[in-house]
Figure 1 (cartoon, rainbow, N blue to C red):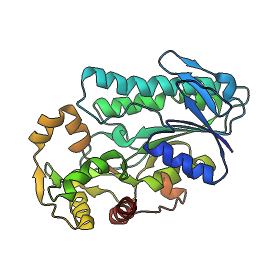
Figure 2 (figure 1 turned 135 degrees about the vertical axis):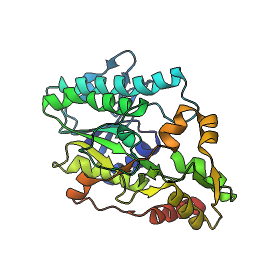
Figure 3 (figure 1 turned 45 degrees about the vertical axis):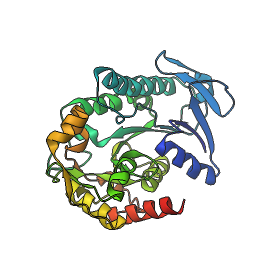
Length: 302
């Protein structure tokens, strides 16, 4: 297949590209800077520029680009970049695909379980409504920006991705140094649910979504086994053979990270991958301990 990818150099994108190339797919990258070639299409979401002719005849599009939600406090400027990078890029791509004479069969666009907000122990699936707050608002607008492509008849899949388990990047990479020296533990009360996904599974889910024509609309890209923050800390400590009994109080997390602490560290989202389960996706790492042992084994041997 000819597959267009945005965000190809990110944590998920780079792993996905490796997997797709091993299966002999042809990849076309969306890039912001020259040079342009038959495998590189120039775009600039902020200015609304995109080489639409290069999109004709592509079989599938995977859209992963967007400003990281981590990496510093959420200043008004950071929040603006988080929102605009998702809305502008997704809308530009969606409208461009809708205007093609030969559009792709499927458009897989990233979203996040931040859509659900802080929901305590409530069991959430794709039929659950959005939460309230900055992240739910971002995710809702992010997904709405795909509507022009859906209206054209393109099969649109919006992947609501959970916490990605990977040593090279993401949340785990930030936790590992603390846990490896025995200073890890729960955050706040530790009862908040963490809905996670192994990096190998999120790339597998994207490939599954491209192939499986029964998938359409929001799809929760999470493991079938969410865990509490307390259980996450205990499991990571056990895998590392380190103690994990310390605790970061909620007020300390808020002092350190501001609004981001409530949205990412203290919020609870108990999310189920109902549509993936119904479509018979087979998880490679369904339990947290399996995922952590696999990641850390590869990290230690690297």
